[in-house]
Amino acid sequence: MLCLKKLLAGVLPWLFAAGMVLHAASVGELRCEDLHDPQGIDARQPRLSWRLDASGRDQAQTGYQILVASSPGKLAANQGDLWDSGKVLSDQSIQLEYGGKPLASRTRCFWKVRVWDQTGQVSGWSQPAQWTMGLLAPADWDGAQWIGLEGLEVTNYLANTSWIWFPSGQPDQSAAAATNYFRRVVTIPIGRTVKSAQFQYTGDNEGRGWIGDFDLGARNNFHTVKFNDLTTRLEPGRTYVFGLTGYHKSAGKPAGVVGRLEIEFAEGPPLIIPTNEQWKVSDHEVPGWLETNFDDSSWLAAQKIGPVGIEP
Image (cartoon, rainbow, N blue to C red; front, side, top):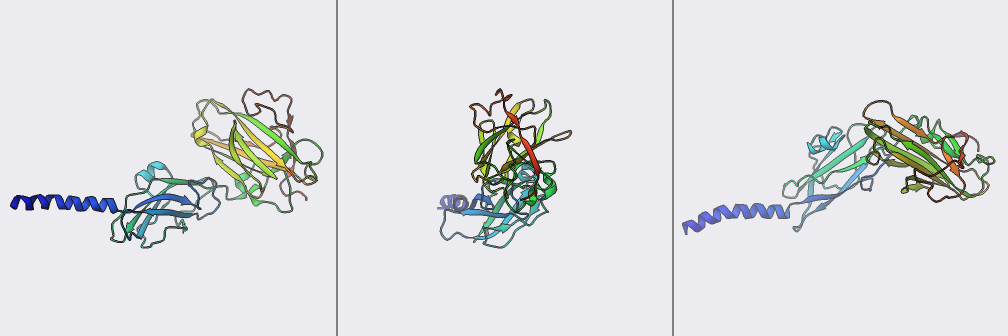
């Protein structure tokens, strides 16, 4: 009997602890602005959400802690240098506004969260998630030039830029319905480590972006910008073709697309490629136009139309 008591005294605490682990809450499905790892967020205080997972009955969140860091390493070390919410007593898990340091354009934010359940037990940290801030001020677009224009309103995000389009007629006044193809060959300098690379663009009626034959997605409202973080895609010494496809459906109205590629290196000045006359354009699709060895000698230089904000 004494041995049985000793055995139970040793085993029961372990079983109790194991049961607590099995029923402990965990956190998953981290979202920023209702998106998984979004890029180009324009909300200065993005809203964060997560899902509470638990295997036991009547599980509930009674508190949370959010860490937001400027690098994966700092986040792994539990250093919320951008924001450490501390323990907050709340059952809220959706649409929580970021409450840390002010975020600048292009800031990359890495975050995770843990929660407390109704018994006061804390979960482990969630898997890390991230988001990237977009361009928040007109000055951030300085140097980029538009390919095209339409509308009576002017977006503030592309101030001090100029439009370009296929060199025919006056596309700032009236353009035929057409699809135009723009390409620019870019070689990453040898020996320069890419720190960050962003490719932003939009179009009227629609602008679609490419890196090689990889489709980066489109925007069909020139008041919104498609933001792409290509940091992990670019390697020193390699050559890439960046493409833009401009779709114009409203015959008799202005047309165009605009974009800017900015590559920052670990050392030295950045490489900035705005849309301008150095982009080649064709008014019809040619097989292989996104390949590096494509012969674009018969393609035309894109036409610079004028600054954003010109009439109409």
